[in-house]
Amino acid sequence: MSSRGLKQAHFNLFIHGVGHHSAAWRARDSHAERLRTVEYYTELAQIAERGKLDAIFFADGHSNSITAAEDGPLWHLEPLTLLSAISRETERIGLVSTVSATFYTPFHAARLLASLDWISEGRVGWNVVTSMFDAEAQNHGLEKMPEHAVRYGRAEEFVDVVLRLWESWPDEAILIDREQDPDGGPGRYVDGTQLTELNHSGEHFSVRGPLNVPRPPQGHPVLFQAGASEQGRDLAARRAEAIYAVAYDLHAGREYRSDMRQRITAAGRAPDSVAIMPGLVTYVGSTMEEAQAKQRALDELLPVENSLRQLSVFIGQDASGWDVDARVPELPALKDFTGPKGRYATVLRIIETEQPTVRQLLGRLAAGGGHCTMVGTPESIASEIELWLDEGGADGFNLMPPSLPYGISNFVDHVVPELQRRGRFRTEYEDSTLRGHLGLDIPGPSPAETKP
Ligand SMILES: Cc1cc2nc3c(=O)[nH]c(=O)nc-3n(C[C@H](O)[C@H](O)[C@H](O)COP(=O)(O)O)c2cc1C
Image 1 (cartoon, helix red, strand yellow):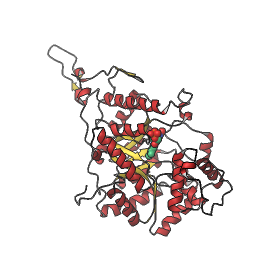
Image 2 (cartoon, protein in one colour):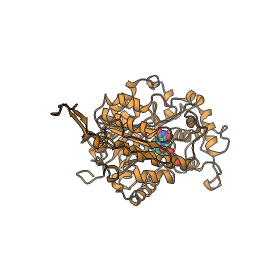
Image 3 (tube, protein in one colour):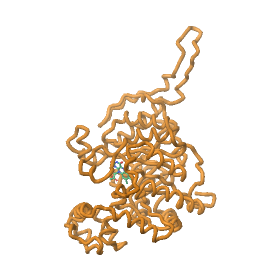
Image 4 (cartoon, rainbow, N blue to C red):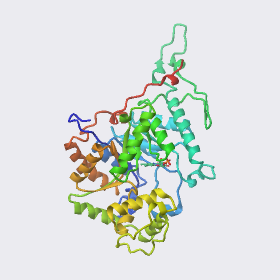
C-alpha cells in the first residue's frame, strides 16, 4: 500500500528475443542482429531500471529445433551467464532466471544462484520449472520427459535441497582470523563448527554438502514459480515467494489469484507476501488509433501460411484456406473439442470477446497467446492496471512487450509515469535487493536446518 492507501503494482520485464510477438524480428528496425550481444540485453535491463521495475526475467529451455530456428529467434545466450554480465552494468533491478529442476542438480543450481546473488549484491530470483519437451530431455541423455508427477516430485525435493544448501555455510562462519594463537597455530579462516553436511539421501538426489559458496546476501535468492496444474500450484503455494501467471482477462486473473491465495493460506503462509504477476502484452500509443496501428503493423508481418498451419493444429481443423481479412468462422464449443483444451479455450475466448478477423486472431496468438493484452493510451492502460489491482486480479504484471526495445521504453516512459502520478508505483527504489523490492524479508535459517 502507498501512503495514499492505494495498492502498489510490481512490474517485471520478461525479456524474450526482440519481443514476444513472433514476427517482431521481421520489422525493418528490429534489433535482431544484436541478439548475440550482451549490450542489447544490458540496454533492456537499463531501460527497465530507469522505470524502477522490480526485475527482469529470462525464461530458459534446453533444446533447439531446426524449423523453430528458421522461423525466428528463440534462444541465444544462457541466462545465468548473461545476468552475471548484466549485473555489472545495473545497480538495483532484480535479475530472475529460470532454472530447471529436471535438468540441473540441486548442487549446480544452489552454487550458480548463490554466486550470482553475491555478484549482483542480492538481486537474484529463481523461477523453478520442471521443463516441458521431449527434445529437451533428449539433450540430457533421456529418451523422453519424465512423467509430470515424477517431475514435480523431483522439483519438490530439488527446492528443499537447494534451500538447505544455501544454509549450509553461514556467512558468520567466516572468521578470517589471521593471528597466530600463542601456541603458534595456523590462524583460522572459517569456524567449521558452523558448517553443515546435509548428507541428504532422497528419492531423486544424494547430496553431501556443505555448499562451496557462503550463504547468499539475500539468504535465499527469491523463489518464483509459474505452474498451472494442481502439482504446479501446490508447489507454488508451499514454496514460491512470487508467482508468474497466465490470465487472459480480469475474470481469469481473479479466479487464479483467489485459488492461489487459498492454497497459500492452507500451506500456512501469508498470501499477502506472495506477489502474483500475470503476463501483460501492451501496445501503447498517444491515441487509441496509434496504439492499434502499432498492433496492426506487427500483425501484418506474420507469415500467413505458417500461422494458419499453426492455428489449424490449435483448433483441430484445416484453416489454410481461410480469408485472413474476414471474421473468424464459427468454431465448435469447447465441450465438443477433443484436442488439447487449454489453447483451444484461449482461441474461443479471444473470438468471443474481441470478434477478431482471422489476421487479428493470428496476431493475438502470436503475441503472448493466452496472456492479457492491453491496447491504448498511457492513461487507459494505467486505468486498466488499477482495475486489476483493485479487483483482486493481480499484484503486478510480468510485462511481455510485443517488440523490444520499443515496447518497454514506451511502457517505462509513458505508462510508468502515469502510474506514479496516480500513486500506484514507486518513484525511486527504496531497497537494493530483489527481496526488498518485493517487500520480502531475508529468511533466517529454519530450526530444522540449523545444527543442534
Ligand atoms: C511467465 C511464464 C514463464 C515460464 N517460463 C518457463 C521456462 O523458462 N521454462 C520452462 O520450461 N517452462 C516455463 N514456464 C512453464 C511453467 O513452468 C509450467 O510448466 C507451465 O505453466 C505448465 O504448468 P504445469 O507445469 O503445472 O503443468 C513458464 C510459464 C509462464 C507462465
